[in-house]
Structure formats: C-alpha cells, structure tokens
Length: 186
Image 1: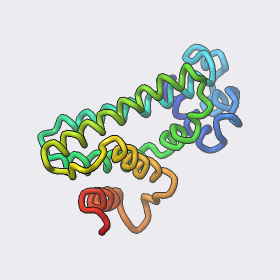
Image 2: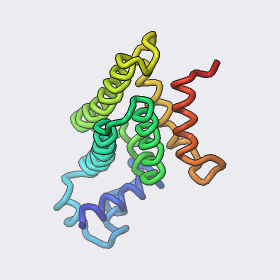
Image 3: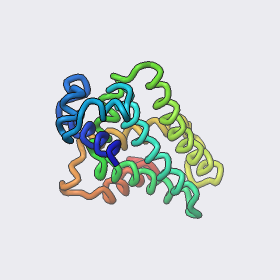
C-alpha cells in the first residue's frame, strides 16, 4: 500500500515537474512520510523510476496477452491492441507520459530491463501481424517489422496530442487507425 502511494505521488510529481527536477524530499513530503520510508521501498530515485516504467509496461504486456489469446480474427485483434494502448494512455496518462518522457534518465542497467519488456511487447505485436499475413487477412507485401514500428509509433504518440475529451473518442480513434491500416489511404 505505501509503495503504491509512493509510486503514485512520484508519477504525479515526475509528470508535473520532470524526473530531474523532483527530489526525494518532495516525494516524501507529498505523502507525509520520511526519507527512511522511501529508502525502505526503494534504494534510489533511479530505482523508483525503473519501478514506475516496469509497472506500466508489465500492465500493457498483461493486457496484450489477454487480447492475443482471444478467439477473434486478426483485424479485430489489431483494433483491440490499438484501442488498448490508446485507452491505457487515457486511464494512465501520467504514467504514460513518465514512461515515454523520463525513460532517458534511467541508467543503462535499468534501461535494458525496460527495453527488454518493450521489445517483448513489440515482438508479440509483430507475431500477430505475421500470423494475420499468413492467414491472408493482411497484405502479404508488407514487412511486419516496419509495420509494427509504424503502428506503435502512431499509437504511442497519442499520449502527446490526443485529447480524450475532444471531438472523437478513443474507440473512434482506434477504429480510424485500424481502418487506415487495413484499407490504406488511397
């Protein structure tokens, strides 16, 4: 419970002020505990940032696994994966921003842990696209690796520009992306 409170306060502060501009003292002041409490759960602010990033990517991996196990066609899996990323950015907006913006502050050791998880997510996504191509549902002239990077780039950057209270919903954006990918723009 306390670890989650500390993580939540840190996500808020890292999102508002940035990782570099947030001190451990500010984190513990935010929830009314001592630095000793902080160091009981985390060895350093760096370890806390790794924990925040790891929690976010593991959440995405869990949701991705659920979708990929569903007995649905590949176009529907594509839609649900895109929707999952966009809706997670809505429900965990601050965590998403910290994940994408503050990752550069991780040490090589911690960054490698996060990169392995990100690569795992990308690899599962690519495998689904490859299976969709083999099943004849997607164009066989496509390179699944490049397509995967394109889709993830498109969906992940929605954290930066997409207004969830704007004129279109997450569902509509996910449908738009899926339609654009499946049917092209010509």
